[in-house]
Length: 218
Image (cartoon, rainbow, N blue to C red; front, top):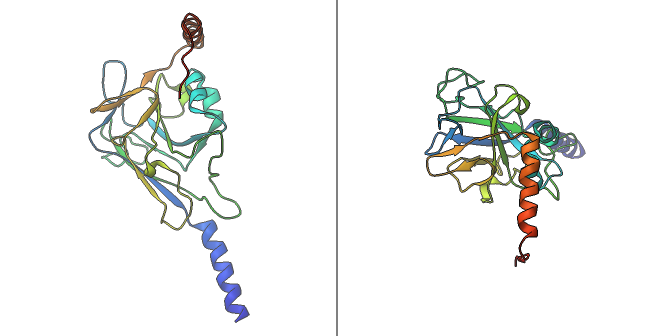
């Protein structure tokens, strides 16, 4: 009996470390991923990252959208992510696929002694974030980007490797755009602002707030 119990314990420990949770990102629906300039589909091969920004609130992500190096250093990826064109005629890097569309599965272990993905904690919320940009490598080499999430229940992180909390998300879901914009036809990337222009925008916003009585939010 002790031998059986030991084997069960060992099997459970190995399974927790070897299995993985999954997030399926289905971008084959109504909303296409599109560039801000010329309103054209994002080219196949452009990267789509799945994860969250460690230690950053949404407001801090928005305020630092010009600093892709900082945001990249804070980004905790859930698996490898995907690319535009992947799953819609393209190879695993999206090359040869349909511009603006994609579907892929990204995986990570969230349990065990050495999980490959650590679930977020405050002040970061527990939602899945998508970071899409017009580069085949990293956001630091991109000229446009979109960062979005959702408060929907299917956008909460998987909590186990057993398959019961795996997620399926889509740009067609109800989204919250931190960077970029959205309408019924697409999610639109936004040109990455220069640091100086961001500073001017912040200063202008502060000036406007200073010129009128503060309104308290309930």
